[in-house]
Image 1 (cartoon, chains in turn cyan, brown):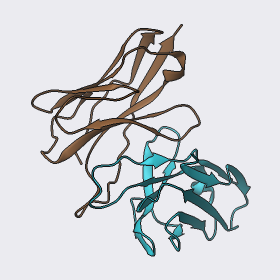
Image 2 (cartoon, chains in turn brown, blue):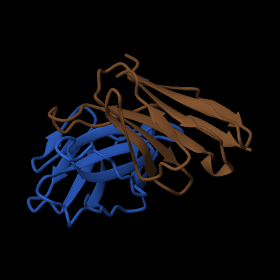
Image 3 (tube, rainbow over the protein chains, first blue to last red):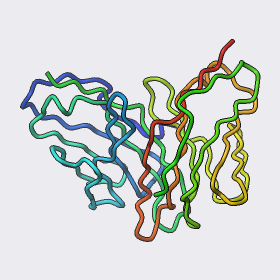
Length: 115
Length: 114
């Protein structure tokens, strides 16, 4: 029973490099989310998706892009990594509209360091 | 989404009940109370949620006051593995114009002692 799986778990990048974080869920959830968590701060929403082929901006979207080509996958891209993007990234998924007030289920995070 | 207020930290003895309070005096009629926890280095874990009735599941109980302005999460028999940051979040459910965004505050650091 995998739930939400994030890859990779750790990564170190140099400033200016690009990379993609992958989130996969096996619960047939409509909604998916990307958050970042920094020391002393709560989780902040980067982007979210309410269904396959749709994405929208959250609270802190600058410097990130996302794609939801398949219902089970939600990708977070950094085109040109900056030290300010050093963080722990969490993906979450939940049931969507018309499916009740269902909770979000989180992955174990990707720890990203940008030098 | 309504703002919540939680104590910064709490202690509990192993085997005892842990009662974590949360104030949400500006809660609206269609907003739910959710509780999550985050154990060090792991992703947030859903615990329980409710609208106005008390709720219980295999992990915890949620007591919501009649005026809905505060709630208490109860871990009936705390263990060392319950040491974590506990977040009380108030939000509307997913659906309509809401995408179910969660707003995490600072939470309560619960430390369970042997």
